[in-house]
Image (cartoon, rainbow, N blue to C red):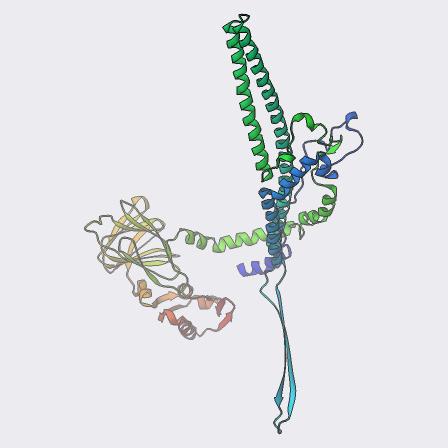
Length: 539
């Protein structure tokens, strides 16, 4: 039934293959498109690239300083290098959308003897070959999405470089003006200090002639010392402003390019016109990038129709029902065997466990016990005995029961009919969940429990025959016998004839020659066999 569902829904799913990228809608800016608005705004709307930075900067010395910064800034170089790197990564990622075509051509020409005397003849050979390497069909748009993401990264790096360039120009202009301001402050402080020095000299002279008192001299001395302190402070600020400018430019700015004071800075910058656009991307670049942005935001395939979504959900549910339990067991298991594999593993306490085909166990060792959870299949336990430093009981949990080792060797198997416990040496205690029932199983005895029912059963030769490479089937109905065979085979065997399914079979089969066992069962039942991909039918 599952195969039919998949055969019907898979073509529908493939026709609905598409990109799951969300549609990107650029949010509206929280400010008006043109600032300011109203009568003060005028009628002309500009964006900053309409005027180059050299036209904004009117002072010739400041232009040279900004040019030095743009040529020597390491941050700007890094931003430009990031653009080149992002462009290369985008090209590399986009190449995954197309197959790789290899073509070679070879030609050779030689002279050789013809076999009659010394006569020779020219021979020539030409070869050409072309091939396509392995190519992944981008059914669900994964490669296209990765390519678009790389392109977005490239655009982001490009915008980052623009931002870095604008920030650098703004920092250089700000620091250059700061140098002018600090130098003007220093000049005023030095003039104030000189004036205070002259006032101090006059006051001292008056005191010597009896006109002024010592209090007047002390007051003048205080004013002079404060002026000296201010001059020293402004000298430090001027030096720091120069250092900040050198740091922004990336090199020491010559003295000839520095302003003497704030008074000489009138008209160094062009006035910003009214109506400047709040959009920072230049119109010409926006026009050039618009087709690429449109192609970027438009999905490469149409949106999922409802029937395609329903088909995908149906397949996902079918896969979950069919393979979900096995995946869940695999996530929990510490040791697991695949179909047809029989393996023995050593546990941390020295015990050994042999796992049958398609079996899985999970360890839950603690300070108080050695617990093993049998998740699926069958396992044969050879328990490290108690004694010395080992005093923890050894327990095996399967479904709603726990088997505690009172000896050394026993096996536990989970089947469709419940859980079977078989003791091969000494004894075990089997206890149902919540301790509602318990019994001791001695050597060469077996127990079976299911749905709260626990009872002693007869030990059979097939309980541990798989450890020795054999499969024992003793008077079992054909569907039950085939279920045991299917645990070791990659191809399932199914009996479709009701009369055939009612028959019982017996036999001992080698696990490495199960095809011979299938043939023996078919001959014994006089059945016919039909081999299909993944399944064998007996009828």
